[in-house]
Figure 1: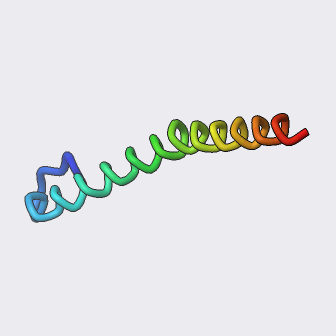
Figure 2: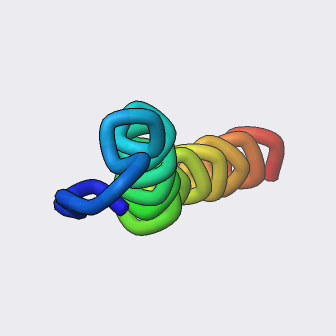
Length: 53
């Protein structure tokens, strides 16, 4: 869709751009951001357990 040159391609190109952007951003969130958030949460839970013992 993003590199099509046929009839109607100029109408579908903006939609394809949004779809590709969504796929890339969701992949980045899944592979990079979420593991960092979970790791930080786990680390803070471990720190609170060691402080309360």
